[in-house]
Image (tube, rainbow, N blue to C red; front, side, top):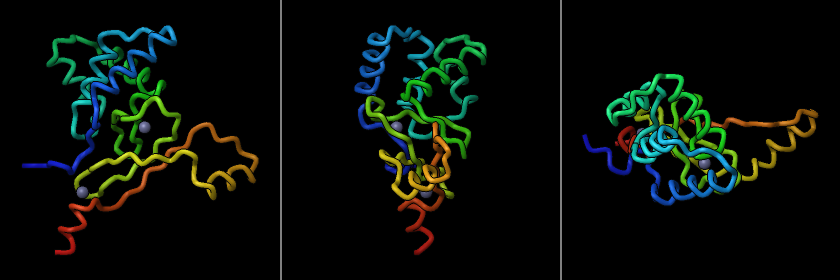
Length: 158
Ligand SMILES: [Zn+2]
Ligand SMILES: [Zn+2]
């Protein structure tokens, strides 16, 4: 089945990889082979991947990693913004602009699980003022919208 253009794909994987290398060098962080491989797997994937899928890819690539190793690598990549977790799908996706401070926001298709990252920096004004008025200090916001992507919406109509 051809899914061209339907799924998530980072435009410049090598660019993101270079940014990750620079970031780690700058902050004195170890960009270990397994961390690099996990990012590479996600950058090369046209779809979001669950931790189990990533583990399988690692295995194929000859990394005899134990699950905790893969999970820690994912945790590292998420923490530093190279990868986002799509909570609704319990899956991970590489970010294509990790060097920009942003709160990821996703559009998720109900039909084909297409995930598109939308930039939400700054947070929508109404959202920000609501939380501010409540006196609640937001450290993290997960915004995931579900609906139909253009391709699936087209199929429903026709
Ligand atoms: Zn992002
Ligand atoms: Zn769709």
